[in-house]
Length: 558
Image (cartoon, rainbow, N blue to C red; front, side):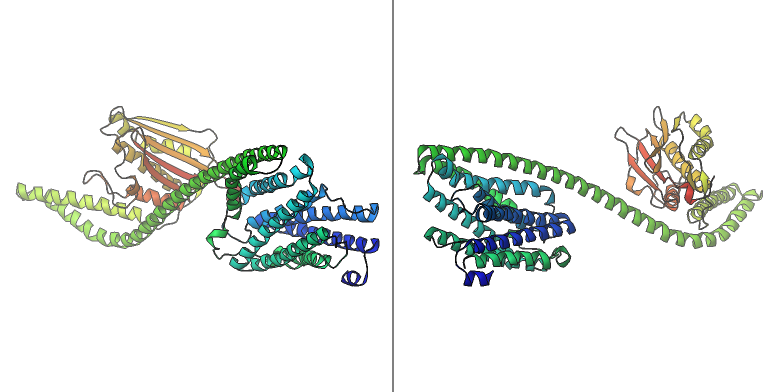
């Protein structure tokens, strides 16, 4: 093409070759960008897709030129609808770089459509404000050429300036993309300006030397589509400059804030005819309404995203605190279990001897009453210590669980029957509601019974002084878990976060060791379940036990 431009004069062959060559190049670049868009993900896909759209509009303009100069063999009309297509092809380019696809950790992809529409409305408004009035409302060919050339040049300068800023502030492989886009579009902007000046002087024809930089800029785009595909670029983990993170938002803000000034100028300062001023004022009001609607829609989406993020943050924080509590509790139990396992056995032997000698002394008739009373007290304290050692041994039990399929309904009723006499004596009303077809779980029957018995006993202890005492038990399935809840209407738990700590108890001295719920916590962890405690709003405590629903195919059939 360069040889033809240098050696040939203006002719149909030269114009046709130039038009076809530029059309093939723009169509090829658009096709390459489409391929890159299909290979990319997330915002990179939108980026390449917008480049393909802009280049496709450029190809439409090239096809229009080819149709006139090759098929109709007529010069392009000075004022044509395809000028608007040529003008708008830069808008997808600006929207593409405003996405900042090079950055990681950004959550703007869901609003990219609104950003593009706001930019499109803004540039369409400028075109309608400056070009349409002198093309259709009050025909003025000189003003049309002047306004279109200035507006198109300004649009390209905005795009090239944004690319220049990004090329200076971006790091990583995306620097090559922005740098080469900058070179290509800067070359095109200069060549476009030169072509428009040549057209104004009557020196331009298709295939002239003015087209060589123009064709070179399109070749550069083709090279970008080939050499800078998504497989060769990646998002930069390096934080970018603060001012370039929200380009689309900044551009939209500038557009909306400038609208009232433009409307004021159109109504009071525009030297044009009244029909042109009225048209410009009305189109400014219409654009303001449309951009305002988009702005409210964007704010609504941002508020919704903020609410969702706050909810996720709250859930994540709660899950983190719960996990931290479970890890601390687990470490406590593991460390304490190793300690007491050895200590309990060593204490048990001398304790048995103390208990035996105290009973012998208490049974000796030769002792004085004070001596006999003292021997009985020694025996009482020895028995209390023996119960404590027994609880320690139970808490630190190292034997593996003998797991099988367990019917929780049966275990619950059995645990309730063991405390039935105590409930009747304290006038405690009990109710147990078990969902029908409750799935069996994979676990140790005796250990699960101990869990239920410990929680029920703890609830009965809390209801000793309550009026109209009630203990409610429910068992039901929720998703992939079987949930068992124990709810009482007692005074509640003073510190729900500590109820599973070893030796923590609010019961009178001699009544509880503070190991029952700790052992229950360990058993639940052994069964891959969870146990939690909280105070109900209406009063009383709520213990919740969660058992995972096991896959029968992964275990033996019951």
